[in-house]
Length: 530
Image 1 (tube, one colour):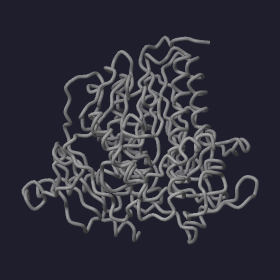
Image 2 (cartoon, one colour):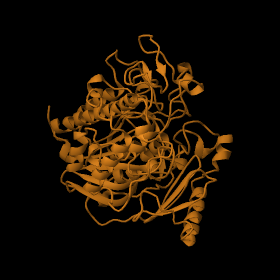
Image 3 (cartoon, one colour):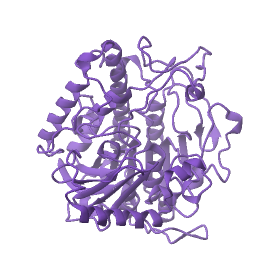
C-alpha cells in the first residue's frame, strides 16, 4: 500500500552512527563505499563544522534533549557518581525530542542504541532493571516503540540488553546481526507509521562502527587488501579528497600522524592491520546498505519528499585498545550463542570479524578516521568532536550544497521542533523543564542567512573547550594548559596562539568558568573520586 500521509508536516528521520570519524564516509573523503549516504549528500546539504560531545552517552543525551549533557544528567558516562549532573541517566528536568513531539501529534519510534538510561552490568543480567527510576527507557521517555540495546556496546551477533519496548529479547538465531536488525526494524516502523494519519519521528541509533569489529564476510571481502598501503596513505588520500570537495580548506595542513602511531613502514604485522581496517570499513558499508533500505521504504510509501533526514556521528574515531586480560576483558568475555569461546583482545594472529572475536581497530586507524584532525573520541580537540552532518529534505534544501554554519548536537532538538512547528515545553509531567541550550538550524536548511548567537562549550572527564566564532580554546585534561586556535586559519589546531593573544585566552577561559557553573560541571578528579 503506497500513500502520502494527509498531515503535511514533515516526517523526521534522525540517523546517528557510533564512533565514526569525520572522514569515514565517501562524501566526506573516504574510500569506503557509502552510496546511499553519498546520495543524501548530493541531494541535500553537507555541514563543514558541526560538533558532538566527544563520547557516546553524553552526545546521545544532548541530541535527544537539546541540553548540554551535564544539564541532562549525563555529564560523564552512565555510572551514577552521586551528583545530579553525573547521575548517568536522563533526569526529569529535560524532555526528549519524542516527548516534545508527541503533544504536537507526532508518532515516535526508535531503533537502536539507547545508552542514556543508567548502567547495565552485562555480566549480570539478573541485575538489569529496565524502567526503574534509575534506568529510564525509550518508551518511558516518549517513544511509542523501541527496538535495540540499552547499554553502550557488545557483540553484534548476540548483543546484551537487546529489548523490544521494555521486554528483553534474544537475537533471532545465528543469522542475526545488530546493524541489519536496526535497519530492518526501522523499515518496519516506517511502514507502520505510513499507515497512520500523523507524521512521525524516527530515531535510528546505530552501534556501527563501534567495536567489536563484527560484520559479514560478504562485506569484509570487499575490503581485504584495500588497506595494505597503510594509514599514512589513507590519511593523505582522504585529505586530498576533502580539499577537492570543499569540505576542508586547502590552507589547513593535515595534522601530523599521531605521535603514538608508528610509520606504516615500521609495522611488521601488515596483514593483520589491513584486516582490522577492512572489517571496520565493512561495518560502515553494511550500515550504509541499511540506510539505503530505510530510504527505499520512504520512497515506496511516497514519503521521501515530505521527510527531513539527518545523519551524523556521536563522536570521532575511537583509539581504544582492547586487552586480552584484565577486568575490562573479563567484562567483555561472554560465550557465543552456540557456547563457543569468544577470543577477547587485539592480538596479531586473531583475525577479526566473526562472532568468536572481540577486537577494535586501534589508534593509528582511528587517526586515519579523523583525517585531517588531531586526537580521538574522549578528547575535545577536533578529532574527538567534529562530525559529518548531512541533511536531506527535497523541496526545502538546495541539493548538493555545503555550509559553514557552526552547529552542535544540542541544535538537533530545536531544529526538529522548528521543522515540525512544535513548541518546546516549559513543563512536562507537572515539572519545570530546563530551557533548551541549542539553536534551531532550520534557517540553514532553508538556505537563509544564519549565525550562532551563543558560544559553544565542552567538558568531558576534564577535557575542556570553548568555541566562539572563529576562536577555539581547548585543554587536554583539566590541569593542562589552555590552547587557543583560529578555526578559520587553522582548524587542524597546529598553531597555538595562547601566548600571542592573552586577552582572548582570558576572555574565553572566563566564559568557560561561567558556563561550567551554569552546567554544574565539577572538577573531574573530584567526580572520579566519587
